[in-house]
Length: 321
Image (cartoon, rainbow, N blue to C red; front, side, top):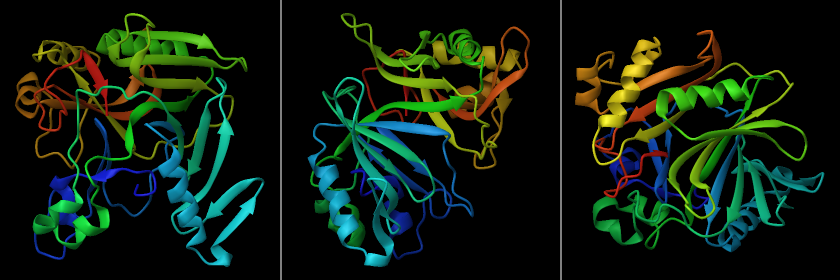
């Protein structure tokens, strides 16, 4: 995450300090990137997302420099070049700089567990929202943690543009209909240049001129066998300036029997009153809305704009974190 240019959330900084304080589960880390975050609970086995995560930067120069520095800081035995990809077993498995379909530069990074990141530069999105970061100047609060993980003012990574998942054949349209039905999300399904069917689920603000959203969930059909679900999750915020849309989504999920629980939560959210008090609920299954059969597994933390981790004041209809 340091290589990617994320910042450390001050709320979890105590988990890295040499004291008796802690926030949440032991080893919990929240890494901020603009308006978004990665949440990482410590566990015996790493979670691997079946697809990749698209990240945005104002410039890729800093990212490239960190990758080169990390590669050169390892011993010859742990750093190598194979198939034009630079490998580094200490911080990440490999990275490659490629040209995207629109002629853009993409830095593709695979971490040592198998998670893949596609990093692009471009205009910043959702600039009205910000997640907090530990700054170098916060040494009085966080000591050596601020020296090691603090940033000058803001994270170099400016946000999560999209998350792309591999999904089974003949499921993209059904997944799109699910998000339209439960979350009132705008969704389209198209074939890409390679003939693969992709569902695009829009989140955040919609540009009135281009029709493009500030964030997307993508589901790309693949004939390959999908790995077993390992517990990875996303958080989405639903609402405008109140919780009406959030409560409507809860009632749809409840009616479809989708509600799930997580042992990390203090309260099992299975009723509307509980959802109101916790400002969130969870689902783990994407259903075929016509048959009621499960077609995709992924935990969703569905939150209202009153949730403490909501990054802004000027609320969009829905956004992805």
